[in-house]
Image (cartoon, rainbow, N blue to C red; front, side):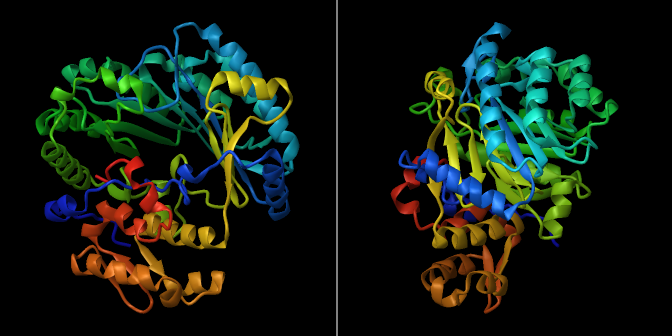
Length: 459
């Protein structure tokens, strides 16, 4: 499979509009409060009947400082004791959820996100992992994909050693930018020494994959300054990069109001930075997985993409398409059987539900037959940049060109622009269309028109 990508400035300028990131289809905007505990129980029963492995996501919302660009659900405090009531509720939720799922189903994937999961001290992390192991069937042979997001400023070699002992084998390091002026502008002061010491410790302790998170579009960034950040990180050769476009939405995220908009790069400069990123990473031997993600050719994500086994979920790209995902903690979203389920978004509501011995389900959505069909189409395109009609037709008992006649007509303009080619067997995204894969997927989204203004720009 050709995993290269072409940067076409003219196409990007013409197609750069708002749209979903498709970590799910339908998107989380379709979740509603009419989804009940009974609805969730029906989906769990269906999930258990189907069997298969599980994936667990834990939201740890605490940070000791605020990064101005952050759009995550977070609680800012320096007092580790503030995590205790939350953990007590989380342990109860683990017990409640664990009792509903067949305990023979192995947990092939586990992820702690935040916030800053390493805000928890070792004792707290140990208790959380022990509670999880008590109620779910965790792997004991290090064969699972157990990952954690860390802040190098709140981590040292001892922490990394402890995380490895707890069973984590993949690690994601938040960096964003090494330029001191940019760090000052977004209130994230982080030295190269801190970052690389953590990365070196992770490799020493046997973590199988290291990923670096960067953001372009932050205040005071230039092509030259971001290129210097890339120089430093490429020198240590992480297995993966996640390089995100900063979405400035101060009306939705209060902390972003502390960013000086006059210092933010123009749309043209952001594209120049992106073009430099694409060129530098491809020259360094990384392949473009899609949607901000790059990996070495021998990384599991790159291999899964070549073998047509890549998947996408609420944490991004994944190699575990066969797992039902259970979300734990405030605001977390799961995918169980044919549904998406989201927990309460605030501590008070979460605590009230747990104290009554009920799951803190806030919203949910049960997919209909059309949703599942369109999800399969969008997932295949966004993960593999190609779509063969025949498997879809066989699985869903449709004639593709009849069911999606309007969509295929709409794709003609994209074919004329060189984003893709089509024939009677399938759709094939060209290298110039890969950066615009969200636009292509949007053609198949029947909910989009009413919600388009609520999404970030695609580039």
